[in-house]
Structure formats: C-alpha cells, structure tokens
Image 1 (spheres, helix red, strand yellow):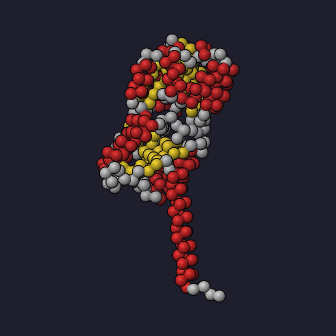
Image 2: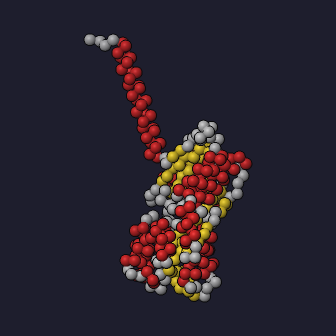
Image 3: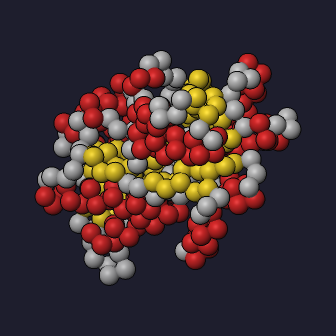
Length: 340
C-alpha cells in the first residue's frame, strides 16, 4: 500500500531537520573543544572591529591569568574579538602551523603566535603574511620570517638577569650549568643563543665564575630530574644552576632534596610559581627567580595588533620588563600578589 504524499514529505522534512541539528551539534562541539574561548560581542553589544587568533602553548608559564587579563583589557578597549587556540604537547609546532593555515582561509584579521625557531614556522608565517594576515610573535623572535613584531622579554636580558642573580648567590665564583626548556631540538651553536650571550657577558666580570654546561629539556618536571641526575653524576664541579622554566627548577629542587644535596647548589629559576616563591621565602633550595611581566606581554601583543590595523605601522621589537625576586624583596613581591 502506497503511503500518502504528505507522509513522505513529512519524513523528508524530519530527516533534513535531523541532519541540520546533527551538523550544528558537531560544529558547535568542535568549536568548543578546539578553541579555549572567543568573544565576538562586548558588553555594549557593539560588533567587534577586528578579529584576531591567539595561538599559544598552554603548557608555557607565560600564558597565565595575568597574561589573559592583559589580552582581555586591551581587546575591550579596541573592540577586538579574540579567538584563543590553546595547544600542548611535543607536536606543538605542527599543530600551530595547521591552525595558522586555517586562520588564513577563515579570514582572520591577524594572528598572535607563540613562536618557536624552525624553518617550517618561518615559512608558515611568511605564507600567512603573503595572504594578507599579519603575524605577531611571542616567546621567540623570528625576524627572518617577516613577522610584524616580536613582543616579550629579551632573551639577552633574561640571561643578564640570571647572571647577576647567580653571581650574587654564588659569591662571584663557581661553575654554572644552564637547563633550558625548549619546544624544539637542542641548539648546537650556543653563540647564537641571546640568553646565553647575556648570561656569559655578566659572568665575564668575575674571574672565577663560568658557564660550563648547557642542557636542554622538553616540557615537564621529570625531564628536568633526569638532566639533573646526569649533571650531579658527571659534572661534580657544577655548583650553580639556572633553569629557564619553573618546571625545570622544581625538577632540580626535587633531585637536590632526594640526594640530600640542597646546600651544594645555588639554584636560580624563572617565573613566579608559588612553590618556587615559597622556597625563596624560606631561604632554602631556590635562591632567586627571574620573573616576566606576563600581563604586559598580553597587553602589548594586543596593542601591536590594534595599532598595526589602524596605522599599518608598529615597532618590530616590543620589549617587556623583567624583575629578579630573591631574599631581599620576596616578602614585598608576595604581598603584591595577594593584593592583586
């Protein structure tokens, strides 16, 4: 028996409705799972003037609440919609490049990128800019890529700050190991590393204070613990260590505690993770840490994008400040954190 036409029409209509609902659900779910947040309207309900994609490594210490606060404040001032793409893992580079390509095809007005040194990322930035999408970089400067601006602390200044902290903690003499966290392969030519250049430049002022070892780690405390075991076993002359991330510093601290060698090393960290600050406050394990102004990085990155869009000109190198926290100022620093 043949079904009435209206029943067939109803079945087709309901099938189409179900397909649309499923597509919408998958699309929305995908956006939620792949983006950490996007704001296209502001409290005034005025439409955004521009849209920027923020691509960052969520494992990196610089992208904390203060950084996001800086981004949000400037975005609101200039009515910029910010889509945040948080990535993680050892394949950050390939993920970031894929997202950049999608952003270009998606019509984004600009990209703010946690950059790493690699030919592939240089090429991806060049291609984005050829397609009319300006790219602003953080973490590592890639001037050969043609990026519009680098925003963040100078690695040379980081090295200088660490050198001064080491010299003070070690009394101007000793042997230093550097444990540098990198998102990519080890660096063969240390003379090209601005952080190491800044560090060694400071240590030149002391007759008996040298960098004798540079080790590289991937993300995570366990990687730093393995490197520290190697240093303690094979380099007994080392008595000062500078770590370029709080995770490295905590890994070193744990090995020092486990080996009962806390008083054999002067440890300088990077960042203001609470446990590291607590060690400094108690006068044990960590002697000092170099701290970046992460809020300023977020603010200046957004300002660079906004000003370039309006003026088509912005400084190619925007440096944010650093400070060293040690026994002399730890109390004031922690009080300031509580007041924020």
